[in-house]
Image (spheres, rainbow, N blue to C red):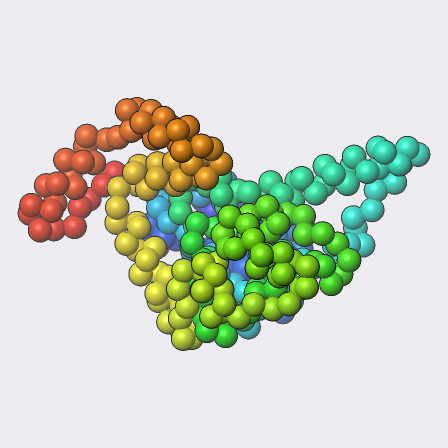
Length: 272
């Protein structure tokens, strides 16, 4: 097994081909500080290349999934230059770095399942928008909070939410900063399932991750890539992409194993 990347703000555990990534700053409600931004990208980049990882569960330690950006970061986001335009360029570079940090969840070829509990606020919404599937417990609340601190959400929420739920609801949440409860999140399509408590949440999400981990990894990775491509292109472009993908990547070994296992009424065993 490959060594995990070093982390201070994340707890990592790999078992049965499922990588657990837990935000691990419970004393700060898992607020995202600068090390966490970088460690998220390092972890998902590592998972992308780790053959033994087939599915990823993203969750949080403590009472809340994530309270958003650590406000102490604002003190560090100052750029000075004799030319204000160059100072502004430095800020844009910094912000685009944060965007890349979270885009690593989408760019990772392995499916990412976000399991949220408690509060999921601000940057946490940015984060889980990049997950492939979102789940929560009945008491989870979601909030696009940036409007209340005088900024425009800038790390993915406003770009991703309109593809995940109705446009009018997105605008209401982003412009009012109000909370959305688990029931509304489920009805709107933002989350796939709601569980009664945290134990049921983690057990339910793990069962789904285990099911994914039992399928052929090559086809799972291919399906995520094709879905991501289709989301950003026309139907015609997407059909051509999947045709080329299957022409080059469909594994006769995997197909034969899947069919043989079904005939023999046993779980299939696929290569990583």
